[in-house]
Length: 422
Image 1 (tube, rainbow, N blue to C red):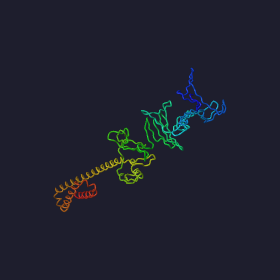
Image 2: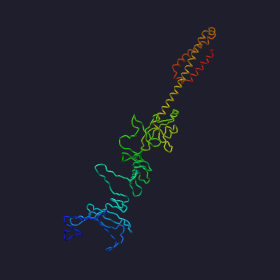
Image 3: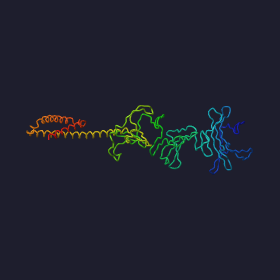
């Protein structure tokens, strides 16, 4: 059209371009462009096509200055085994890359409606090989809705030999528990490594927070503190890991306790608590403390045990309670001993008073004094010594506990002398 020697079946140099077809009919049907193929070699043939046969293509060309070069293709092909009233198909979209003269497949829609971008054949409703960018003036969203309240969404990271890691988003209830995001390990065990719940407690099953090179099952990087919600306020409180493995604040208020009773503890056990120094197996650093196994034999309540019942750690923060209890019992026993000493001092004072009164009575018996002059001189000498000893006993009451036996001997002598005097 407009050209005397066209190079193609249809070629135009007119200012009017393109092909325009209108279907005039009072129905829902519209105009169509039909492209078809058989495996026959004659007009009107109906020889069946085969899988992967191309049925028709829309090919787009551009001139490179000398020739018409293929730039893009939209093609339809058989996508499966055809049969009577059965023609599975796929659409293939191809573009020509920079520096190339032929197009390559970029996207396809297979016979099941699965779409593959950068990969074929697509194994899911949408299979993409490459990065995805969501761009806009505000945050973009991916909406997943299967028509019910318990919509779940899963992202898999498969590997060639074993099951890969994957992330599951739970909108509603599920057998694993709760709404939220679950990250599963890539070891084929379907083990949850992280669960961020929107309706309950979240947890990490190994991993790291704020650091890319963790050395422990859970390592938290940064210089900021780790906060336990609900434990803040006041003057602060220490944290512990309880028997269930939970990190929680260590409470001591009466409102958190019941069955309260005095601690049943023998202070002599303190001497059996062996203090040691040692090197840690993990980093060979020096430290000191107790051996949990040894302390468990002395006072088991001072030890934390693992799930198998083996000694695991020492309740160092509560050792001061044992020391306090031991000191209180020690003070009580000192008070008891002091009372015994004071009681013995009062007995000695009473005995000295009795001796003094007996001395006065002896002085009134002049006749008896005359007969007992020889013994009276000895008695007066001993009486003066007893007075001195009685004075010393009152001044050194605290030392009488260590000299109790010696004092008893002196008391025995005094009693013997009294019997003689009587």
